[in-house]
Amino acid sequence: MSDGHEHSGQEQVPSRRRTRFPGISSRAYEHPADRSALVALRKLTGFDTVFKALSGLLPERSLRLLFLSDSVRVSDEQFAHLNDMLRDACYILDLEKVPPMYVNQDPVPNAMCIGLDEPIIVVTTGLLELLDEEEMRAVVGHEVGHALSGHSVYRTILLFLTSLAVRVAWIPLGNLAIMAIVTALREWFRKSELSADRAGLLVGQDLQASMRGLMKLAGGHHLHEMNVDAFLKQAEEYEAGGDLRDSVLKILNVLPRSHPFTTVRAAELKRWAESRDFQRIMDGHYPRRSEDKDTSVTDSFRESASHYAGHVKSSKDPLMKLVTDIAGGAGDLGGRVRRGFGGFTGAGSGSGSTPKDGPAREDGDGASGSTA
Image 1: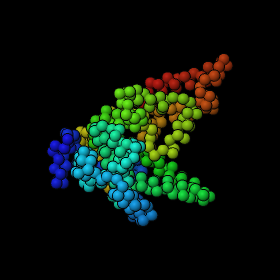
Image 2: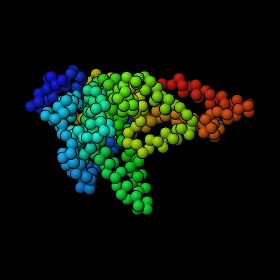
Image 3: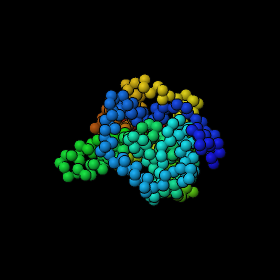
Image 4: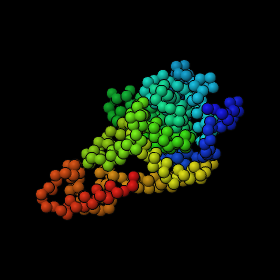
């Protein structure tokens, strides 16, 4: 599979013909919320210095030594097929320095990119045994996308703070203060995962392989028992189903997670793959790294705000529809909230309150015809 590779040279060529993106900026594929946060952080004077200073507190050196001593480092001699995929991904995304990759014995399918000074990529044996070659290629591209975006720095900080929160749980209010930061970092990191999924698609350039990989993360080896279209319908049902109580439960369920739910990731990636933005990148029209220094923080936040406003407006989630109604000045919101928490059933039955029930039915009809 490594035809075209020059193992001793600097330039590595993908093992099959794929579009390459010379000088591509990570802004090209980053989710708007992820991008606005990163642009703001990069603009902070001394930000890099502060985080470098934290490296003395973080167990980064210990992690590197641990993986070096108790995992298998990917190379031409070990897991050579992974080494080819890694160099392919770095070539396609034009990442000059190929990060070291390790395979760790762990039955749980997982991969991560961590490190402050230099990113390192770790994949588990559980993931290798679960995915086929093209699915794995998307995962490697996903992790290289993390490296190109600089996510490894913040992931390392998140791991450290999560560990610290456990250690200081006995200190009054100490744990609450740290967990507030952890919660905010997790929200950002969930969006960064959507960004990295997009990077994985740019590297693999095979949407079906990306979809299959996400399905396997949810349902395991039994690919013959699963269907991509049915899997994506689950995402629609998850977003639109239930009442306001379910909307609140969705928020509570996702708060402790570092990754979005797999059905949501699949639906988000498919939407992006069908978007004009993706096609423009594939056609060679994308922001370059050389332009990153001129990026406006205000413009990035404006784009992020616009994205969220559009998401809320088009969402089928009951809580998001209520937010849209509030923004639009809809009447009888108290009644809608009461009906929402009652499942929109039985409220006003036989009461003859047609004016209240009518708008609620119209909202439902309008939402069902909206595009995801």
